[in-house]
Length: 199
Image 1 (cartoon, rainbow, N blue to C red):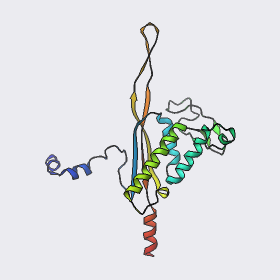
Image 2: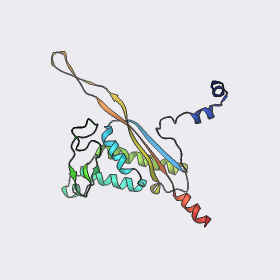
Image 3: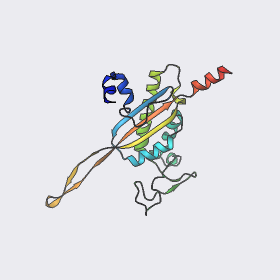
Image 4: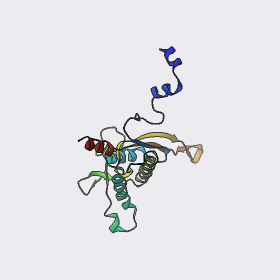
């Protein structure tokens, strides 16, 4: 087994190794990807946003996240139109030791427990737009707005550790929690067109 690995060329070795930087294998027809490493925000909010936009088209996901950002407006009539992101992880469960908000208020529109993660929404809009630009660069005959989000994930990144000096020689930890984001866009319209041509 070891001799086989030594005899392999570099390209074959790279194919057999896990995909560097991505937690999901880069498999799929007409795939466009994007990732952001060590973004300075909390993973809990990014996890809920990722769960909400998975399965949407890229254009619809950007529209949805822009509706979430309406909560950041100065005008009250615009803030009322904002859409909440459903929060499922640890919501309403104080007894169970789980990561996530323990109590989240219910929002209008049959959402249930939800919040308006402004910072995380902005980061995901930027990530989706980056993936759409990558799709335009890779494929000439593709509409990036119609590509479906087949995989989106938020994982804990590095913790930037800091300290606040206090009285009597003590210090309080002041840490910055970072997150790694990744997204896959896949185009299914080409396969549909091929099936129609066959008939």
